[in-house]
Image (cartoon, rainbow, N blue to C red):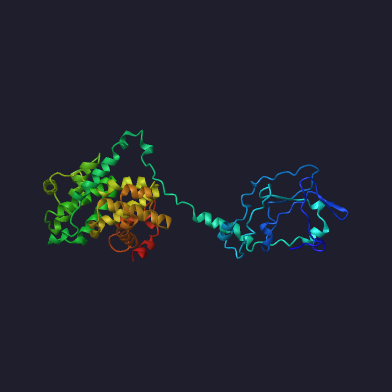
Length: 425
């Protein structure tokens, strides 16, 4: 191609290293322009931050650092343009970096630009959807974040100096309890072998004993052991209907002797039964129960696991009371005998948490110490919530009346976690 003088009229000659060229009567000095500026081919974008307008110096040009203060202002490459979904296709010339020694930064001396240069300068074109770039980038960063696993809480760290907590052996103890809890369970249908009593009579007996237990202000361990002794004895010995109350009273007497410091005397039991039984009958039944059970009184009841699981849940007094309310409701129900003591305790804690918080709550620490996942608890938990719903209705309301007092914080008045029933359905 032959370049004539007429074609050169609108051309701007690049400056040399020393100092500038003459154009007409005006001298243009130190004017550097990048031919590969990306922003010139993009529609609607703001001037690229690397283009620095700087007044001319009589000496050498200052070199601009490539590193920008704002991390969002980075050179746009083909890869970054593809990530933000640009509708513009960058040509090979547009993404090519300037070949001068100043890297990514270009100096333009506005003071020395000629009118011809300003006329020839193309309109800056901007990237479409430029304002959505930070938002889309933030979304990508959120999606790439690693999911932090919930840490396990050391629930025994606060008891290191408490010798009664036996922190060194507590895990071994509960491993032994889990191994032995199967021996403390009874067949869930053992009442079928009884010809004169049924599950309704058992429920009446347990509901009445809960009131007697509360009247004597006995320990919680005593109640759970009493129910265990009754079920284990009835699963091995046939009893007539009129002796069923006697079995319950003697079972509570034996549990008191095992757990309590101050034990009710036989005369108290005679009075509480309205003198339905004599002293001799009570002592004879005591001997029969002990011999039938082979004096095996050391069995893990739900109470043993309740204390540990409540500690794992980092419970407060309200959660503890609600958990005991739910599990005592379960003691009355014959159908709950199909669940192991540890499962009953874990389900009571889980149901209490869901009731108080209004949503499913089962931490990794609870799952670790109970050895039960949330799915394993749903069946037992839904039954407990059902008992909670009808606790105030019907004839057997001893547990509800007990936990409706100020001594137990009126905890029975809490609204049941009905969403757990919907989940089970």
